[in-house]
Length: 479
Image (cartoon, rainbow, N blue to C red; front, top):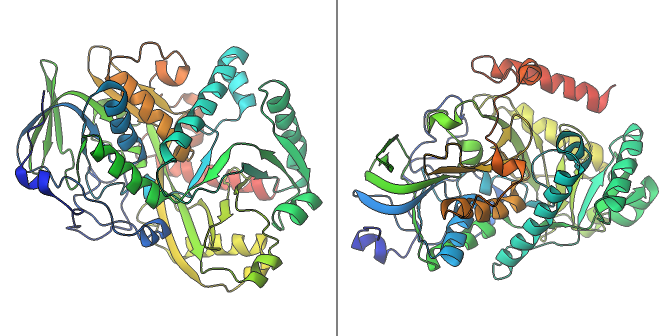
């Protein structure tokens, strides 16, 4: 079935301009939709990526299409790429605001060999060794998928691996145990570095009590990657429609009727790739199945040679620390420092200066030489966390052609590419061979223990999150 598009859409040569300003207080638990035509958040990635590429304009009439992807971020665009490349299917991608407006241009640009928030040892505890080994192979395969996708995209890759900094001495024994497991059980060359080696040869993080280095990890420019995915998807025949939020959804006789401001889009299959910006009202299958949390990022002005030396930056590799409320940071190609961590609980609170101040203070604790350094960029964004800390790429009801790829928990830069590939498999009818738990089960509701910890059902969800963040702070810094 061919998509019906307007001639104006076919002739479009520029990106759709925003019709509304950026909303700094947007909250996916409070808003029924993420808006329509809103501008990008003022991130470093958007500020330095250049002009956004052309898109296909908003939906302006009723359409009949084979496949709709909701969400034009990393996952949605790579799903469209793989649908075209591997199955000859030209998807129609619907985006509420500007292309890659959400998670994809608000992250830290760290592509790590991970899927979700759990360590390999936790995979073994939860799923058993055989499944854990398969999950590890899935991550390695995902890294290769990601590398192949970015070969012809100028996204400023910084390869070499991932440095996992122990932020306290008490963390080192468990880090050493995990590294040994990775080497001996997963045949993955993780190695332990002592504190002196880290500070002399890698980075002068004053928190560092040692570190684990793993061989896979790539830093990228998130805005240039998103724009590259957009160009690639459209070159393969996908249609990408910004300013076209799904405001209503009915399914009748196997056809999905997606209401947008410009017209009804009728589709035979729908893939959902909305990440941390998934509305509670988008579809009943998703209500209360994600816990969106905020993450803050700042980027300094370019560091001088003396400042780089004072901070002992010997690497441009991606770095995180072992806090539960972890910091992620690196020296960017233009010698700015980017650092991020968890932020406010609600969208309403996110713009408060104190959250930026906390992050700046943590940066200075790690790198005292940067006290007083000006910031060129500061932003925040929502992260989609599943209630069991693992993503899902799944068809929740075998009788309906609805599929989703969600719940990356902050590790979506790399795995979104693999998830897009797996989502394309599901949509094309090739997903039954996917046998890992992240493919065969739905995003879970919280169990009783998790409900006590996270209070995941509104209106108690945020109360539980405040309690949990306080507990995590005590575990990270005091106990």
